Image (cartoon, rainbow over all chains, first blue to last red):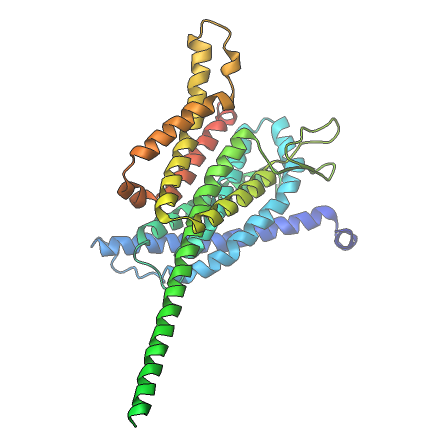
Length: 166
Length: 202
């Protein structure tokens, strides 16, 4: 770390890291949203409902991207969390931003749940896809999408409190 | 000529038998991976909730001091705020890994029964503790503070979970097994979310 800090300032380093966290989050958000939309719309099409013209990319195509992005993103977040605990959370408490703080605490839990379900997610999207687990695969994908969306929202609010551009 | 045909037939039978063995082995391995992945998911989400509620991290990190302590460490003066989240996750991951590995070594029927037992226990234990606390504050006519303990709440929760597991039909236990993968994390998030209510009602 000392070598890095001899090249760039410490706060600049953490800001770059936070920006990388944001970029990966956007990519992950796109992938999980498209996959969730794909599994939900395919279920509707089978049921004979509308959205006939919408032909999504096969949901399985996103699985590899999500597998590649989710864990590194969680690790990156866990690293940045060190700075959050000292330089963001303490002022948050002092300024009584309880809603932001509570929302971020919940983010920690929802991400932990996502990490725990990840091996099952990976298994469910392995080729060939099993028909037996189709329903579970659909709802687990939606759950994972919800975790990513929530984490993105809560992280964004925390960043607005003290982060890039705040 | 006849001998050649015989040898060819035997060789073809051997090939198909080897192929069948390989296919069975792949199916068997895939079933084990499935059991492990699903059990890990159920166990991790359940244990993470339990460890967070009981505050049982594997280690505590003090970011201001840059120190790592085994298990739960209450910060000394000047050490700054402690971080338990990493410790809960690692603790839950290790425990869930062990549970997942055990799951691959036992029969499916036992696994489904054990899952029902553990998930029911996970719900009943805190419920029993909450009931005890209500009894202590609203009903007890004597000093019943000694009842306010997770260990006092354990025996009734164990007995009730064992009774429910005994009476749940095997078919139902088998049918809902994969559903625990969604029920447990959602239930865990409800519990954890409720514990954060203090932040939203200030």
